[in-house]
Image 1 (cartoon, helix red, strand yellow):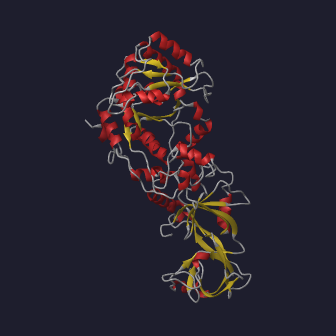
Image 2: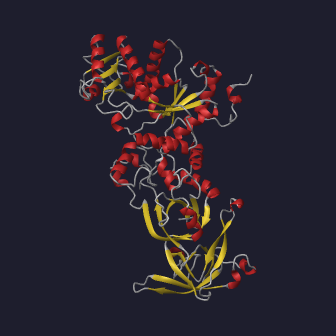
Image 3: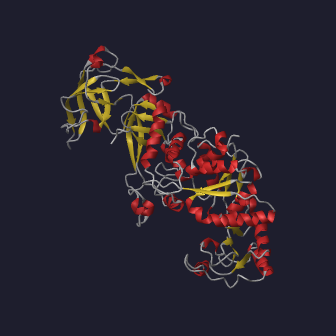
Length: 576
């Protein structure tokens, strides 16, 4: 008889979580669940936008369900109304769809279970498993003890059941101020696991909820709500990051209490994996929110942010995110991943799809003095050599061009193979030119480069095979379209900003965004870019470009018919 592992189409290369799921299937544990299939969930808090770390969790939660022919729910953990907003709910759903996953008709909220959680809490009070405490947060922390010394019992721990029940109900009627009363589980104040020392189950929050309004004034804590919500939904595998490993015994405790009350042996299983820590990146929602609120970035979708909407705006593709996550994998050990792996993944993907165009971001005028005035030739350009079916387009060539300022040196450094006095280079897909001189302004700045061209060296002609060391990109000065280009770099200057003792604001990279308002683009590319005006942010059509010899770029959302804006997604491999 075939084992569960042998029945999986992609049985090779299973990670340790998938191996555990396969073993549970083989042992019959999944058949004991309400849905009798592998059932996972992705449970984001609607208190901010998703970042690249969440993408790793999304790919695991939805991916494992897909691999084993199961289901994955989307469940918003909306138990703290003071920090939640429907804006975040909408953005989270958009990001999950962008990554290629769908929860079908299984979108839930922890708030869907507020009544069931409340009923369970009351039942625990009645069974002597919970009590209402009146200690402050500071007092509770002080009497919990340390990992090596037992905690002290609250003076309210053994109050009568009827009294706790009455106070608990009055907590939800708004009779008490925030912080004055909590509901705590009565477990073991001497347990070596600090999470077992009478953890808080409910606290008072006097703030309207985005879904339930003012119906509730007492809200469940994560440790109580999360596992029970998994139980209510029939989740078989609750997959989370390593910081919740120490919470697992408490997760199992609450699940077992609920299972006993319901008279079942079914309980969800929690499995943990390493969270994503990436160089030059910060994953703290609190600090990312501060960046947004303080105007340190343009918003949650700023291309410098590690948010999925920020990466999307910068030009990262969903396929590149999947490739990156497949590369780094899942383990039981936290570590630091180089951001270069993510950049490599997006390069690999964009190389397959990005349109090849000519753009000059720091232009200097170049005049071919022996080229006929008024003449315009149309040079043929490949749209993408990786996709022959992508075809070609035409690009105007004339006497006056723009080239990159850094592609010229009046006195060339050693191993500088671009344009310099009395040297030849090829203009890509056009002619070989030779520099004969320069024109400077009163400050000594070069304003024009003078050249001659070899008429027999045109690409595609017999003389085109003459070898020169350098090839430059260019645009025709008269036909070129002015565009704004935004060059992006790491948001932080240090490799691990989360570990730095300085305020994170001191670590921000002042060169993380450089705006070049006077770049130039070939007209065909500008025409394609304008087609993006009004397009969905998730749409990929005419979005991605390779500015030849510079890097990969994408059309920004700020683009209008009259003002085209490009974001640099990532440099080319051989760029500086």
